[in-house]
Amino acid sequence: DVVMIGDDAARQLGGDRRTRAPAVVQVAVHQPPVPTEQANAVNTAILQLNLPWRALRDAVQAATPPHVALLALEPDARKRSLRITAEARGSDEMIDYVQQLASQDWFTSVSLARHEINDQDPNRPIRFQVDAQWRAQ
Image (cartoon, rainbow, N blue to C red; front, side, top):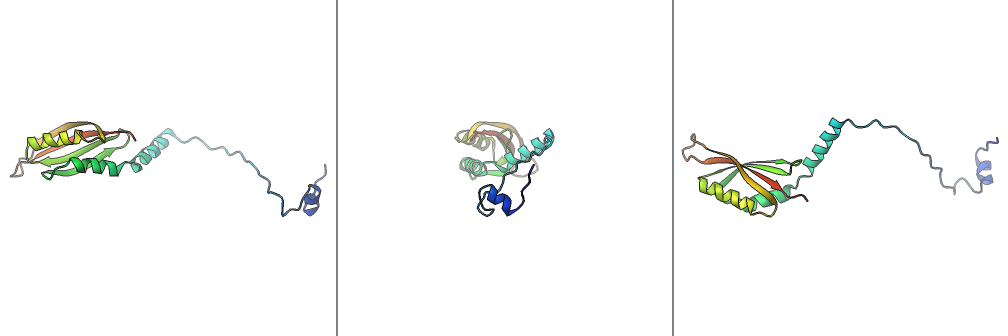
């Protein structure tokens, strides 16, 4: 076997070292598989980061009248669901609000999850939670 080094090798192989394309070397690297728990955590984080916040906010805002106070929005990206906590003066306003949410195209289903009267407040508002499923994008 003959081993050529430097410019002599380049000339014999048909070119100048400066004009030849560099050699491509492929190296196989063994990477251990990602543990399932870690992969699930990463996927959940990605789903949370990719929440359709603007569309959710717009749909909730369009359905919320001035006499309903939004207290919390709790999205679950994996289930494509949103839990809304709100207060209204009475049961009629609460029911109207649930119906308004259900009429939004963004949501596929809306249901009243729970409600209670706040006896500690002299106005006795109704605090309630609504679960809404949003459409897949």
